[in-house]
Length: 337
Figure 1 (cartoon, one colour):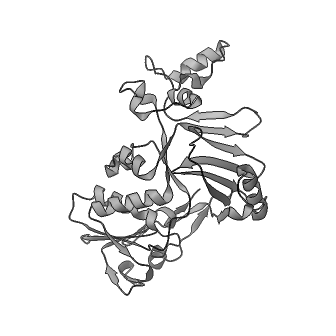
Figure 2: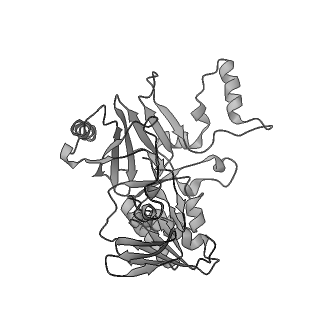
């Protein structure tokens, strides 16, 4: 593809607005027109977005004021994850975010801990982690992190309710000049292996020079590249089903997420917005959906099995991500939990 790009068209569900915003900001130095096609009726399924590293990376690229994001979306900061029931050891394993201790004389801090272990000292490695100690005591204030080497060892995740995050990103896209069009793609016009235009259900024909497909069914990419080969990862990731539920909870609970294993998979507990989200990943070969919903309902304790939503997932990725003037991103490209 060698012709000049003047118009970029992005197609996908409302949460794909994040991709639209990323394009809008990262390409704002060029004279691009960016159009984002979504269907307002396709609401984001109940769930949460967990952004690792806070403002580092994606949000930083978008120029987002993280405090504005937290306030607008009711985001919740997590300092790490507790893993329970994995392996033969009965105790929990806490994996905090950020670093441990301080490297000295070009020797990483964990080497000093290994030296202590060899000498018989059993001091926990997490005693040297600020996120671990703060989370265990239930105390964390972003404004209290010192601007020093010690402060830079603090890491955290931001958990945001998916629907509110989607709306925030949609607004950000509009703010940066992205044209948002409400509609559903009905057909794709392809010539010489490239997309020429999209026909929408509202009768509009949408032309463009470059297309980004973020749809779960590869609606555009499959019309360009055909049915691409699929690399199935189920051999390494056997949990192909997810039972999930959201229950109102403003207590905010622990500063740690919890992942607890059982004989069929594992359960995740995370807070975001005004909700407590519980997800149960399991293998459909080992456990049927009815029992999975019942198991999760029993863990939550305040819901019926009928309140639980089941999602089937095919772990893996498509072989073709870029064909002609169409790129597949997100659900159009790869499927992970």
